[in-house]
Amino acid sequence: MIALLIIYLICIVLIGYSYVVYPALLRVLSGGKKFSHEQFTQHESLPDVIIFFAVYNGEKVLREKLQSMLQSDYPAQQIKILVGSDESTDQTDAIVNEFAQVDHRVELHRFSRRGKANVLNSLSEILQKRPLKNDTIFILTDAYAIFEPQTVFELVKHFKSDEIGIVGAKYINTNVQEGGISIQEKAYIQRENLMKYHESVVFGSMMGVYGACYAIRAVDYPQFPTNILMEDFYVTMLTLLNNKKSILSLDAKFYESIPNSMDIEYNRKRRIAAGNFQNLFHFPSLLSPLRFKVAFPYWSHKVIRWMGPLLLFASYVCILLLPFYSTAYWVIGLLAIHLFVLFIPMLDFVSKKVELDIALLRYANYFLQMNVAVASGFLWFVRGIKTNVWQPTAR
Image (cartoon, rainbow, N blue to C red; front, side, top):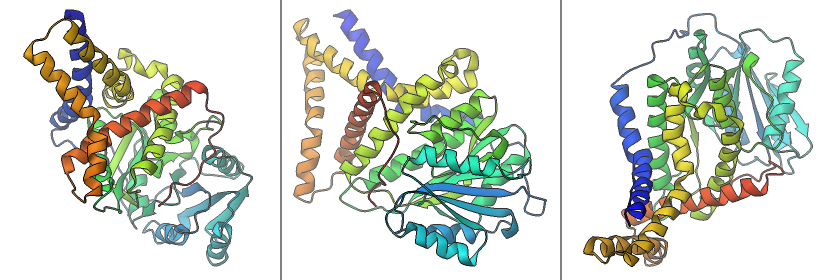
């Protein structure tokens, strides 16, 4: 019985540590700190910027996307935009060509269907054949990520310091509605933004840029493995492996509409989880305590969460076995609580059907569903990820 109780407590404590204690610890450690490294001002000579991204059937947002980048307050003559069409079948190519005809900064490159990471590889190969300046900055983005006028500068300004390797932007959800999961997803993203910023100022090891908007020096930009699903996390960890800092700038913002459907978000989280497990095995050395400034946030923010489904399963096994050893009131009480948790998805479903929005219930269901998605992503990874060709998330 003692062994079961110890295992149970370890599981619960680890989950509580990653989701509650670690974020609070980061806030304390950051203590109002700000970045101390050198930064460009808008009056200095700035590096050239090349923005590029992959898109598949993005006609609904592409005009707004291109306009948001072309309206940047960064020096216009120092921005170039390359769009890689992953064999789009809608009006994507026509829209990009429409912009390219009136603004020489925009280029369309069409490829056979190959997936986001491989489109990015092809675009970077094109760029490597061009005479780029040594300080050129690449900005990677997505078709659905809308920039502010100052987004480009707020990303680039940090590269005045040689210690900075990669800079991520703050993610803002524009689709917040009642009745779905967008409120819960918005809360999750806001929390992640702050955690990543605190990791930046405390450790210089922000755990993963958002692939929809980040910047990196052209000389540091890698070729991605052909089947990688989470190329943004891959390039973040590669940067940290090379002893450069990974940071998030709260002043560099992008806007994206996140789906309000649990089913859609489940599939997206499943894909993210599978890609995260790929990266876990790409960078085992970053888990070592010898790399404390990376390993501590890596374990605390990411790895323990990826272990979440296993920890939850183990806790349930223990709590189901404990009554065979003791029928104490606290054992029966714990069992009742855990059995009740299993009914939360059904209770949330029923509450939505009767138009009763119970926030706590929705948050609990969101947590459970996302852990199921992580478990499913792990099984996908174990079976083998053959391709990273994707379908855009329904918006």
